[in-house]
Amino acid sequence: MGAFLDKPKTEKHNSHGEGNGLRYGVSSMQGWRVEMEDAHTAVLGLQTPGMTDWSFFAVYDGHAGSKVANYCSKHLLEHIITASFGAGGTQRSHVGSDDSTSNSQAPPSSAVEVVKAGIRTGFLSIDEHMRNFSDLRNGLDRSGSTAVGILLSPDHFFFINCGDSRAVLYRNSQVCFSTLDHKPCNPRERERIQNAGGSVMIQRVNGSLAVSRALGDYDYKCVDGKGPTEQLVSPEPEVFVMVRAPAQDQFIILACDGIWDVMSNEELCEFVKSRLEVCDDLEKVCNEVVDACLHKGSRDNMSIVLVCLPNAPKVSEEAVKKEAELNKYLETQVEEMLSLSGEEEIPDLVTVMRNLSTDSGMPPLPPGGGLASKRSVIEAVYNRLSPYKEEDGSGDLECHW
Image (cartoon, rainbow, N blue to C red; front, side, top):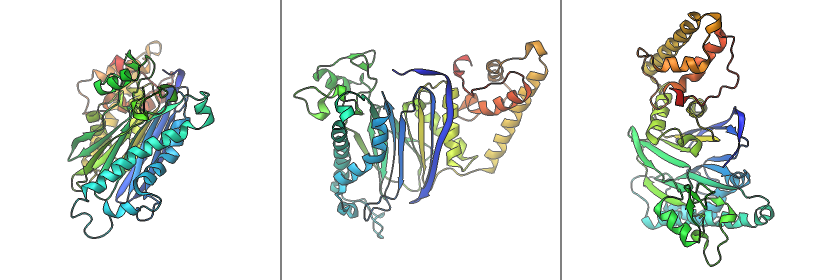
């Protein structure tokens, strides 16, 4: 179930890229956990011949260690490609191509089914491959990992999910699609667990594991007479296919449950939209998401991959102006709050945040992020003016507001 640090590790690991009509940004943070167990993959242009206009992104949320998540981040894609297209990528030309007809009509449904089957086979393949690692086979490493990803062809989105990380598509200014979390209490998952001789207690597999599908976790995959997809924990992904709508598709978010634990699909997408309207630096946008989730009370590792499509929100002068006005208002309110207090009555940062949360005259806060997303602005002023510095930048403060 995980142990926690005395204060969170807030250093972030970032990356970004651009190509194939896409821009992406990544942010990950260890947070309160004693170990960073998340990993991710971001590939613009697959190296398989003829597939340079395909891309792949994924987030892996490890548990009980980071080995499985890290290995999958490096090798899952090659297992999927081999299973879907073989070594030469020969199937690729039927599923989306660079010629003038590729975007005028959908590829044959049979070709889409080949890709879907290849993704499934790729997951089963890498799961069986890792089982042969001596430390995993002998129980010296009991790690596992969820995996959520998207394979983008010129014409289709292939959303992939195994576990309780999640992907969402923001299309036409609303949440158009979300993957489904694999939790032990879901009826279909519970049935498989019970058929394999297990039980669901406190919403966990055998009272222990909080996800019902994952890669690794071989302690839960040793029921005699049952195939790999019939075990207590299954490595089988669900694959959802959507035809791309270039004029409406705006962005895709992949994130681990450390993000989704404190933000709903709609909240996160509205927050990201509002950030894209004031900043075109995708790493910074992702960092703001991670910080907001930390201050909303997330205690888990946090990772997010943001993929912006050509119709993504653009920076707006009006939005930038309103953001500056909000920041100035918050700075002024904190300065006033501290200046009116005597030396013996200087409020701590929690009190300052609580007081701000009741301020009826405040300009509109970022949708989905709320006051938590402005803590860094507030904290900067507080640390400049108060002798009581907030050292770790953390806060399980949302419950107080």
